[in-house]
Length: 490
Image (tube, rainbow, N blue to C red; front, side, top):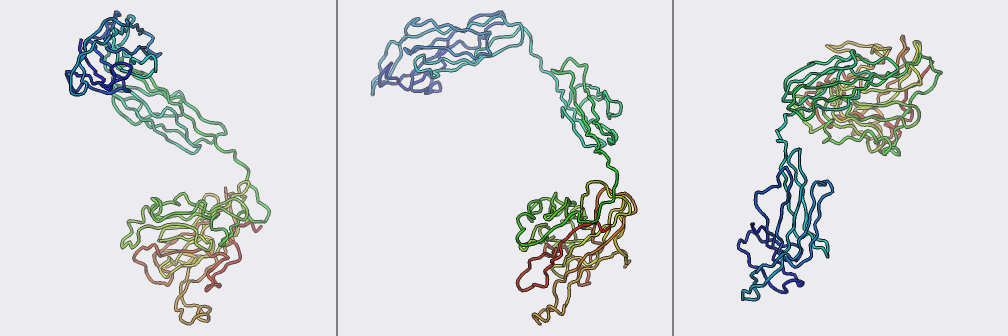
């Protein structure tokens, strides 16, 4: 037997003011103010056939044993006052010996015909029910625990949209495996392997009004793994019911009101900081301005190149999109390839011969905002110019923005040489094909500033500003009282 703990904070119930002397200082720990010496045999697990493991607990404190409920294979008993032991204590500067009773705690395990097992048990103060000492009781197993090889699959569920055509499953494996689908419309590549792999599921877009489902089973014949087969459930959403195209009655499909009173509501989905990760990369940054007057639709501003931070002679930190102080959408850092997208949803696809009108007003905040743009509309599945186009150098356009001298500004303040100028975009088009929704796209087609001069660097100060009803008191001529909208004319 080896003494494995000496708990030296003295208890008034046992020794009064005193300190136990132990052979090995590393064996000293304090437990809840109680003095307990515990002895246990080393390296002697209970055999698989069953047996008893005993420890000696030197203390006068009444004991009880706590065994986890999951360890139903283990029981305990206590032989109280099984004997006494002389323990040395320090009282002041003197060393005295005292006779202390001890108990024997027995842990008995039933036969084990499986793997080795352990139970974390506690020896408690039976009066106050706090732990005096914890130990692990170990029983050998009749079955040798052979380490298993890795074999796992993720995810266990795949859910895709109706228009998706592929998905992947990750196989992490140290054994050979095969993959099969119970739906022949879904192909798997590779369908087998020996080791780690990415299994690609390929399938057609779903045009039916019912879901596509499948069970993908990836399995192994190896006995060296814990689980030999995994099922992955697959579900592809049903296609939306196709409504017949109709020609709506004349009226507004979507309308926006840009005004200082609406800064907060307009900014709900459109507040981008210069440090946002999407500010420079292609796409709309998941930002949009919803109609706040009527209808369903979106105004979105798309970066047209993969990464604006790669623009040569870049002179800013990041671009951004947000709502200005006067309630107007603003776009920092316009560049060639950027585009504005206006969308209005109808209750059904728009039938051919429907006549649509787009109206809104913009102005460049300075001379370096892009000048030449191409306004287009979606006709069926094709983008077509909205209005007559002009070809210049290597680009085609049908919209020009201006930044220059204006007589109205000079009348107010003769010191104005150049100033922002509002440009109204008012385009009416007629659809020649059934079209899912009303959409207009306005794309920058050249790196020429609004003053007509080439622009060689990109800066956050190149701000495109949508005109609204509220303006600075010094610039009332910027006000636009006709609200942006997409409407059916006839």
